[in-house]
Image (cartoon, rainbow, N blue to C red; front, side):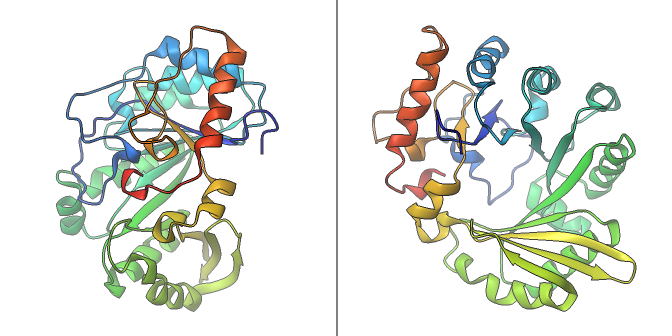
Amino acid sequence: MSSTIYWDKLRILVTNSCNYQCPFCHNEGQSSDKSIKTMDFDKFKIIIDALKDEDIHEICFSGGEPFLEKKLVEMIRYAYRETEWEISCASNLSLITKEQVQKLVGIPLKFNIQFPYTESEKFHRSTGNGFIDKIITNIRMIRNAGLDVGLNCVIQNDLVEDVRQMVEFALQEELPLKLLPQIGLPKSSDFKNFVFPILNEYAVSCNDKGTGAIRWLLKKGDKQVSVLYIDSPCLTHDMIRCRNYSEIRILPDMSLQPCIQRPLEIKRLDLTQGKESVKKQFREAWKNLKNCSSNTI
């Protein structure tokens, strides 16, 4: 954990807009305001310049769908040049182009792909307008370019077969898989009761990281893959775990994630007073992380 600003992971929400219509989406804690917002590139650079010497583990680019922001690739490249942080990007991967991939070659970047189902009809219905064949093609294009890809699957119900098919797909393609129970469903906290037995059928090892993330190494034949089950503190309002392992999200308008700010006191980052002022604002955000309001997460 950083000794100065305390946070060790940044999530940069470059836009609040998305071309998918996933029913489970909480839009990374952004409000339901329909006006489209995008992050200013120059302001993004100020944040990176202010924090680049901090002990930060990872920066993740997200949205909305981040590839709706035309400056996304430049933002990723800037973070790579100016920092030594791990870099990831949460995307549905429907909009990425070959030209963008080529500009990212050589950067140790990992894509975390929203991938709700393995069946084309369910995939299309869940996303509103996504086509699984196109996404699989883009996944292979990215992997062929030497970039890492992992699947993020939000578990939306207690249908055992859907999870089993997802695990089988991840094994066959050897794509790391993250399983995330949908926040807000009455039984989400109990999904592990049917998911864990499925994972144990293929398990070589299992490791509870103590962060709300439990990692399995699965193997079938000559294929193996890691699977991470996220037992989110948002499901149980576990503030101790949230405080110890949470990330800070910076929204397109330069405000911080609502769940770390007191009601009616949501403020935007002031980037005009220099690096130390920016760091101070991150420290204040950490101090405010005392109460859970998971309906805004």
